[in-house]
Each structure stands twice: as structure tokens, then as C-alpha cells.
Length: 374
Ligand SMILES: Cc1cc2nc3c(=O)[nH]c(=O)nc-3n(C[C@H](O)[C@H](O)[C@H](O)COP(=O)(O)O)c2cc1C
Image 1 (cartoon, rainbow, N blue to C red):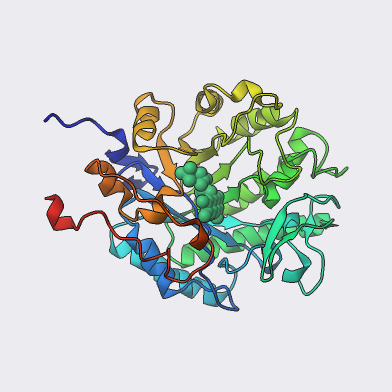
Image 2: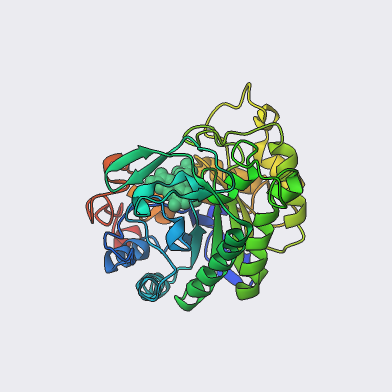
């Protein structure tokens, strides 16, 4: 039988990195850093190594400083011990011939005083984002945060840079800035959560300023082609009041135009998980990724609900350069091999997404052992 061409399985040149395929494992918070120091463990190294046949792995979101925390058992990348823990992970992935970027995140106002000895988290403005934080006592409602001072914003940018330096020392191959809706950066972008009157609030340019300050700081460490950023411009559920607004489209046009001059590793765009009809971003409903392709001249990574078929199709059409898969990697450590051999995918257990030690983490079997595939 003639083999069907699968662009997902083709090699790809990402700057100076050679990816063995175009299947990217997107970031998955799994809450397995179950220790007081939020240090990555040998179990986490095993989990990532199991998935090293991906062309590129993006680590779970990691905290850039102690004030960025807002979800239990998520590892950080701001202490010596954490760097040592990450070395286990990067070595395990490299030993299996894989590549891995570190995802750097800060949750801003979507945290809870339980993480800060009773002190309020900080955000762009003193506005409750109306989301939930996963605390040691379970999910709790967010509160009205403290407003960041300009000095604190500048320090936070430096903390991203420090985290990027740590990622380099820990042996990562690059970094992705976590700017999914709900996190600190989109809290600056959103009209609902940013009502500052200084240079970080007001017009589009001011609200987007922090994006470029963080990227510029990190690029000093890594060079642009090892740096990337992930946005979810049209997230609606689970983002509290940070839903798309009337300025979302022009805001992203501004960001994309400016980023086009950056020569980043890639721009990671998450698609809509829901129907956009009746929202301020309704016009993006059809041809979503084409819109971003048109407005951004660099490499584009597409994400959200892709399958083997739709992933191959979007690459074939030239609308994206890389496709990332999140949930499918949970129960299918050998996702790439399954695509290669047209094998069915296993279903993951949601009860063990964020808890459970090795249960529902490293115990998902491969479809077939390598020798049987020859
Ligand atoms: C359990 C779980 C944890 C996630 N954690 C993160 C995260 O830490 N950082 C991030 O950017 N996205 C995170 N995501 C989102 C995924 O990376 C991806 O964008 C989303 O699941 C859509 O892709 P998919 O349809 O292939 O799963 C998570 C998703 C799931 C299911």
C-alpha cells in the first residue's frame, strides 16, 4: 500500500535546532512537584523522557519567582535546587534524542493569599479577575489583588530574565513565555483587568509593553531564535473576566506586527475551544489560524484540539509550521509512533491530571513495543 504523506512526521529546521518531526508536546501542568521546594523530581524526568519522540517538548508552566505561584505542586525555576531538578529532566530527554523548552509563567492576580502567608497576590490593577486558584485546600475563588508598583513590574521582568538564565543552566534548549489567558501577561493585555493610568495601562501599546520588556530581557540571555511565546487570544471559559474584548483583534494585530520583527523560534497560538458567535472576536471563527498567518511573518505553531488528520492538513495547507498537542500526550507517550503506524489513541483519566504521583502519569503504556513495529 502506498504510504500517505504525513507532514507532521517530517523533519523541521527551527532556527539552529533540527526537530525530528513537527509534532510538539505542548505544556501540561501535572502537579507532580510534590515537595516544599517545588523541585522537579526523578519521576518527572521519567515522564518527559517517555515523550521524547516528540519533535519538541514544552515543559509544564514553571514559576519565575515565589510571587508568581498560584497552583499546587507546580515546579519553579528560580532556586538552585529547582535548577538541579530540571537538570534531571533535560538530561533524560536529551539521552532519548529529544529537545525541550522551558515554559516560564507567572499567574499574577489569579492566585490566592494561601500561597503568600495571607498576603494578597498582585496584578496590573486592584481588580478581581474572578477565576479560581488551586490551593492546598482545593479550588478557591480569586480575590481583589494588590496593584503592582512600577518597580515591582520592572523586578518581575528581571525575574523572567533570571528564570531564563536558570533554564539555560539547567540544560533546556530554549524557552517559551506562558501568556495564555488567565496568566499575568494577559492580565495586562485585557481591558477588564488592566485599568492602570501609567505607561503599563491605557492604550494598546502601553498594555502590551510588558510582553516586549519580558521578551527583550529573555532574548539577551538566549538569542531570539530560542525564545517563543504562547497566547490564547480567544479563550472564553475558565478565564473569569478576561474574555475577549473589543480591542482583542487590534491588540493582537499590534503585537503580531511587532513580533514579526523579532525572529522568534515560533509564535504559539491556541485556537478557540468554543463557538465565538456573538463575541467581540466572532470574525475569527472561520479561518482562525489563517488570520494569524497573515498578520505574522515568522514561524507559527498551532494548537487546540488537533488530531493526526487536522494536524497534517494545516501543515499541508501551509497555514502553520508546527502543531502542538496537549491532552493527547497524557495517555499516549508514543503519540508520534501512533501517528506513524496509524494506531488508535488511548483516553486519559482526568482525575489524575493534576494529582496522583505515578498513577495516571508515567504508567500509560506504549501502543506496541518497538520491535513489533519493524
Ligand atoms: C492537564 C492540562 C494542563 C495544562 N497545563 C498547561 C500549562 O502549564 N501551560 C500551558 O501553556 N498550557 C497548558 N495546558 C493547555 C495545553 O498546553 C493546550 O494548549 C490545550 O490542552 C489545547 O491543546 P490540546 O487540544 O491538544 O489538548 C494544559 C492542558 C491540560 C489538559
